[in-house]
Image (cartoon, rainbow, N blue to C red; front, side, top):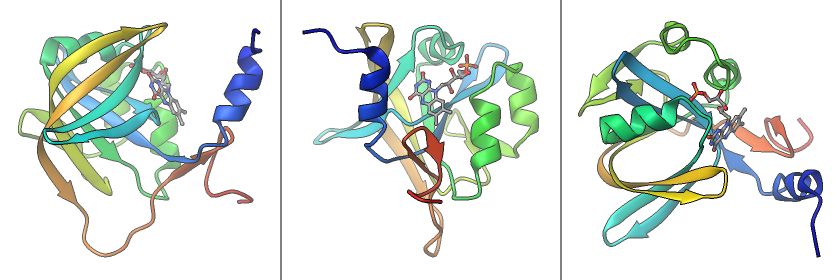
Length: 160
Ligand SMILES: Cc1cc2nc3c(=O)[nH]c(=O)nc-3n(C[C@H](O)[C@H](O)[C@H](O)COP(=O)(O)O)c2cc1C
């Protein structure tokens, strides 16, 4: 039985997620893209996964860098998410945000949390590649700031 891809997209969009900008220090400076296909994978050892569109420009940069960071966005990070989901030049994307290099990966000053990883494995899967990262460093913001959410193809909590 074949499933209509749009129906699949609509159904899986009911799984609410956070939003993260995945970054790496590429050959021409920092590179990054907006993601929501991010998941914790293993506690022993510490692994997480990010699904990269094979057409994304950040995937080859991550492959080359051998490291990446998952920068979790705050509730007010919608504009930033739009910038990093665009096909602007990578340098232009990073003009929209202050960042610094920590442990060899670009981390965003406005992040709610970040997780730095070494590339453990890049597994081809359909039109995407599963990037499995071995976690090397983490940071979380103080207090109880709200995260940016993505649900049914829109930013923000249901009904917002
Ligand atoms: C909310 C949201 C979530 C996204 N999640 C992913 C994702 O998990 N993986 C991915 O490869 N692209 C994802 N994208 C699309 C990329 O951000 C987009 O293709 C981007 O232009 C890639 O940039 P690049 O080519 O500079 O790497 C998402 C976009 C949005 C708006």
